[in-house]
Length: 182
Image 1: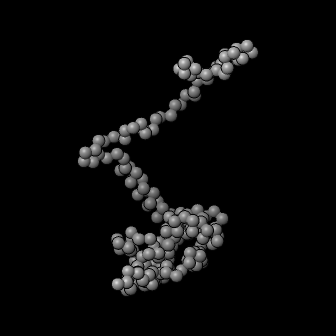
Image 2: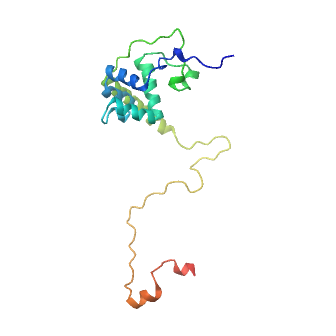
Image 3: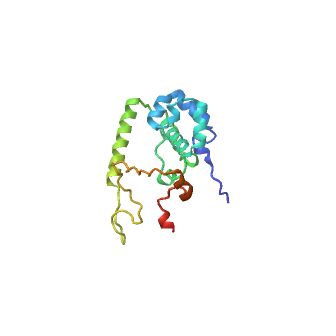
């Protein structure tokens, strides 16, 4: 019985991260990649070598770029729920699906997409909070981990009494907790 999976049906099989980036940058350019993916390596000093270096170190960014490559650049249909749980390099594309022409992307579409994402995130935040489930109390967690409001008034200044040379020699440094220690 062979448990090994054949990844030949994945467009990422055998494609290095550098070659993947070269293909996408040649077709779209760094500006559109940044607009759609929102990864700073495509905005700040963009270059193939520096982007590859960053993406190799950062799993979430590499995964985001690989998913973009599969579903925007190779224009494949969205993955099934089982395949969606897997990283992009481990997904199996059904044999009847083949890569198509790269999607036509523009900066205007990217702006609309980012506005839509921001609106969805705001709605998600608005609905978030502490929810009482079965057997749970509602309200903030116990244990003193809630944030306290910041004081707006400055802290009062503590003035020290001027010490004479004879005082400092006998009593030592001033310690506000000295009485507590005794």
